[in-house]
Length: 466
Image (cartoon, rainbow, N blue to C red; front, side):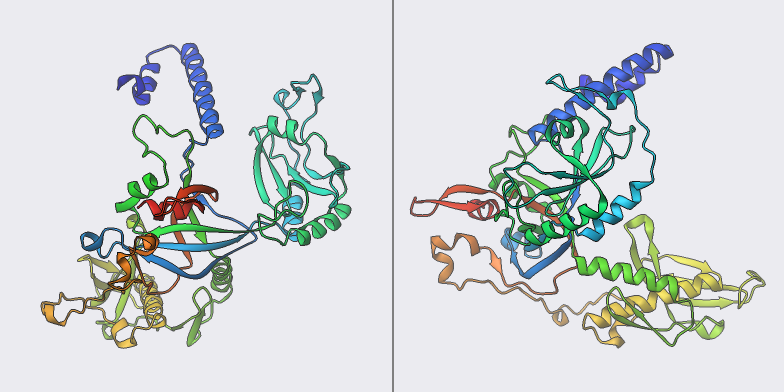
């Protein structure tokens, strides 16, 4: 459809003089912004992958595993994870955000001042702590941290002890938060700590009017969901989007990335450890996974032939290929390295490369780290250290591990067992992070097998409709 071809439109603009280009492009941007705002208001805007953030995030229990396509996709398993999120923001984190912006001079513009729809003049938004002291708040005062990044954006940050960070349009902020009174940081800290403790409740248990608790439990479908993605979306009651949009008024799902707080802490410790430890210890501890990695001795030359190495392919999603040093030649090259000369390496993907001593040492360290990961997962060190990979032609020696269904042969005939008809026992470890499909945390009305009306959560509706 040529009327929807933005590339064609922008290409045609190049044929105009500069003044007309500017007017047409500004008009195009204004229309695009209007469409985006309308889509966001209606809940139809696709924000891509959304990171689930909070004071603390953890996976609860063992995930449920489903095989929705039977023998047609027996390795395509979808896991249903239970995720517990603490949306709160501690006083320490709030003060850190405040101090980051405290000394920043925020430029203002004429668009930051004006009149609201009631005819009241408003001033520029100032970064600082604010308090809602209206008398109907019987549980105590509500404290806010407002951060105005500057005139370059029409958004500002609103931080709360119970709900964390939220991005708000500046015009909406002035309409919604016009009853706040600015306060000093010392008083704000006391109020923040008190409200943070009061909010130590489930999300559906407010501690006072319009103040939900910090803790929320949600469900995320992850694993190989692409083959059944259309079925999952359709089972939720939403039409699958097409080139011309969806017939549904509001999306009831989003693609999310979940990383546990423990994993993020281990990542941070691992990074700090890598920066601080520069010595040549016999063994080093990888704080990220709790791995003990044998020290890789520096390469010396001919005696390194046959030793394992690894290489990270950044252009292929960060994949790591293993291999070995096939040959060493003291050809007079790379004189700045110790030892000089060239190492010839071959990898499991068929690639053959030349390396100097520094590159070979780096490849050796990565190889040792990969071996440690496999050993930590339960693989014997002898098998984890294999550098040559050959195809197995003895099919009888290959053992296929089939997952065990939850229901027995008789139980799966019961129509009331709709939810577990495709379920299998989960095997393996719970990962540190996942990317999956999250449906709205809402309750919807459904009918059971007897025609009775029942209230279920959205994720349960999906399982019932599959």
